[in-house]
Image 1 (tube, helix red, strand yellow):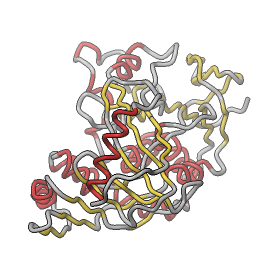
Image 2 (cartoon, one colour):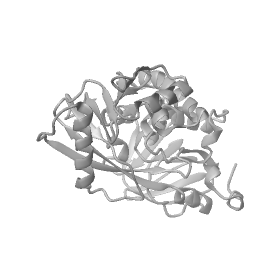
Image 3 (spheres, one colour):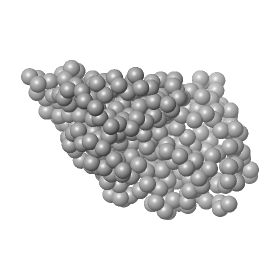
Image 4 (cartoon, one colour):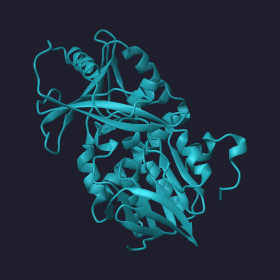
Length: 348
């Protein structure tokens, strides 16, 4: 097989955004991933710093990081050709005042109506995940295979796949919530072992239920503008920590659908929905694990539910590190999840 500058294992939002960023910077990149949908495809594609910072009550410095990545999205979408959809995001019902106060704290532009309990922001945006993954993967060499083992040989990382061996001096792990690959250094395995899997469920329907993003207690509803469900809607989303099962939990799905009807102000009625499950990863503090772990080995892991929002920031940071430049977000250093006694022996 070929020997590119960089091999990336994983073809979700972090993996393909990093591949696209590196390709645009002139690097030779090969992506290794099975030809199956990633967890990033089982998503609504929210680029939602205002709503996410408010809903989670994030510290100001984390909200600022989400804000920065939202700004990076405008440039990244233009450079890659991704359709970034500017549309309002609206919260309806209980919790609107609390979220309004959080948006004030983070200095996100918004409007709030106390009488109707509605909160509106134009700071957020949306994309269609499958279409965005396709665009980011254009022109990238891809090996549709599973990475079975990794080892170091001279100054190269060797990745043993079900289709053969590919090697490069730089290796990026963007493997989501998957277990550590055989052969990784122990310290990297410990970093990966700190990640908690989180299952998310969404439903997709051909019916257009809203022309913008609606959020409320227990559900959101958003339009779908590309792919086989173009003109339809996505309903989501659950977060079940510690669950890896990809079989949708119908009791949970029905609860989300009921909350969606309430959000829409409609009486429940029969609707044709395809329910899907995806498993993401989360670090102990909820922030991604991004950066070099040593000897040209990098990680881009644990997006929790903000993988799409943070993708250009993660890609930008990894390109900077790979090119020997300074990075913007030291708070994402993957070594932070290790005990002090674990932090020696494999770090640049």
